[in-house]
Length: 476
Image (cartoon, one colour):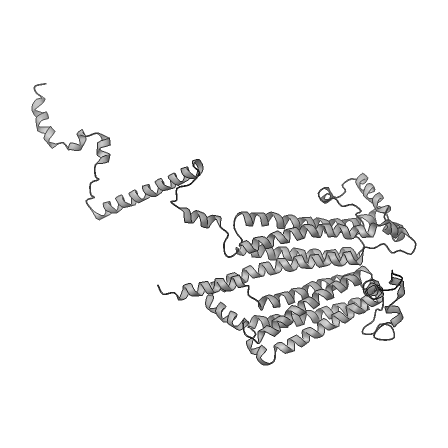
C-alpha cells in the first residue's frame, strides 16, 4: 500500500472533476458548448427532435387519458377533422363511373321490356332474390308462380320451362344490376364522407343520390306489381305494366343518372379552374356577359323539353303505341288521325266527361303517339334554332369555345335520335332499333346537360377562384 500512495497522489489532480459528481448533478449543470459548428448543429437537431417527440407524446397521452388535449397541434387536428373545400378527383371518377352504370341499366331495362321479360318474376325479395334458381325444383317453383300470372294465361300459355328460363334471366339480371349499383354507390359514399374526401355540399349530394337509388328500387317493384293485378285476367285485357308507373320508373332513372353525371363533372371542373386561376378568370368573365344570359336560359328550357319528350316516349312504350301508324310523317290519311279517334269518349271515366282531354292524352295510344311526334319535332327544331342563334351576333363572340363545341354535339345527337325514332316506327319497333332509340334519348339528354353545365359556374367555385386569384396577386 505504501508503494501505491505516490502514484495515487500524482494521478488525482489530473482527473476531471465530473468523475466525482453524481449523474443527477450533471444533468442540472449547463451543457458544454461544442467545439465546432458541426457538433453544435448536431446538438441542436437532437434537442429539437427530443422536444418534438416529447410534445407529441404529451398530446397523445392527454387525448386518450384526459378530457382536454394539450393544444400543441390543435390547428392541424381541426383541419384534419373538417370537410375540405373541394372534393377529391377520385370521387368525381367514381360518380361518372356510376352514371355510366346507370346508363347501361337503362338500356338493359328497355331490352327487358321489349322482350316482355319484366313480369317473369312475380315476387320482390331484395336480399334473397339475388340468388337465381339452382335446382330443378327451384325452377319448377318459379315457373309455377309465373303460370298463375295474367301474362301467362293471356299471352304465353304455350311457353315451356326452357323458354321461361330465358325471360327469367333477363329480369333477374336487370334486378341484380340494380342491386350492384346500389351497393357500389352507398358503400363508397359512406367511405368518402367518413374519410372527409368530399366537401359538405357534395356530402349532401351523395346522401340524396343514395336515397334516390333506394326509392328507384321501390318504384321498380311498384311498376311490376301493376302488371300482376287480378283484373287483368278479364277477357280483352292486355297484361302489361301501367304506363304511368313505367314513366315514373324511367324518369327516376334519368334523374339519378343526371345527378351523378353533373356532380362528377362539377368536381373535375372545380379542380381545373383552381389549377389555372388566370384562365378561370377569363372564362368567368365571358360567362357573365349579358349576351350569354339568353342563351343560358334557352338551354335550360331545352333541357326541360328533352326530358318531357322522354316521358312521352315512356307513355308510348307503356301503351305499345309504336305498333300503330307505322309511317312518317303521316298518320293514316293525314298528318293526324281523325278527331273522333283522338278524343274518344271510351277513355273517359266520368259521366260529365270532364276527364276526356287528359285521359286521351295519357291513355289513348293514337293521341299519345301524336303527342310524342309533336314533342320530338319541337325538340329537333328548337335545337337547330338554338344552334343558329349560337352562331350569330354577339352570342357567337361571347360564347366560350367549349360551349360552342357542346352545342354542335347536341345537334349531332338530335339528328341521330330523330333517325332512330323514325326507323323504329317504320320497321314496327324491332328490338335493336327500339333499344338504340332509348339509349339515344339518354345520350341527347347527356349532351344538353353537359352544354348547360359549361354555361354555369357555382357560386362556391366562383368564390374559391377569386380567393385563389387574390392569394396569387398578393405581394409577398
